[in-house]
Image (tube, rainbow, N blue to C red):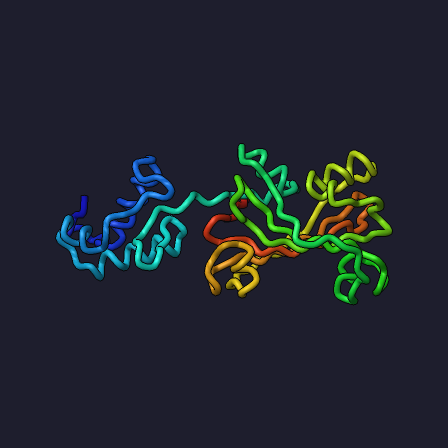
Length: 240
């Protein structure tokens, strides 16, 4: 209930009330919420207060709005721990979700100076360029561009890319993937990213660059990804 005599702001109380219903499963993904007017009348509070609570829940990924249709419960965000090096396929399987990819492009190109420097190869050396949409339970999660030295990882095919690249590298080529560095920054979706991820142009996204290395320090992979910020979050455990 809403306690108007509490020092806790009313919009925050309403926000926590709705979050509690979501976490208990009483409100499920896709469910429609009552209108701002109905909430205002039920709790005898202003529509501006209800709008403030709704806006915060939308920004935090609990709700989403559809123009002319109302406000709905979002799917829960996928949480990826930042400890340990796993592929997208392995990560989704651990969560009991069906991983998938929609391959947009697969070709060998001449490495640009920037890509060559990241992979520690010479400019214009051949590299695989793989562009795909990564899916979890058939929902778009990320738009991903991967670059791999064709002289290092030989025999790469579309079929291998559809299965698991890491498994091929480790089990078929007997190369040991050891570690990676990952840079994460916030951004907004451009027109292409919005189209591929089924989100609005200008919606928040997470830009992630991963550089993956073999046991001897050889760069094996450069991945640039645009993740949906409304469906994905990262968690790290820190010990003093």
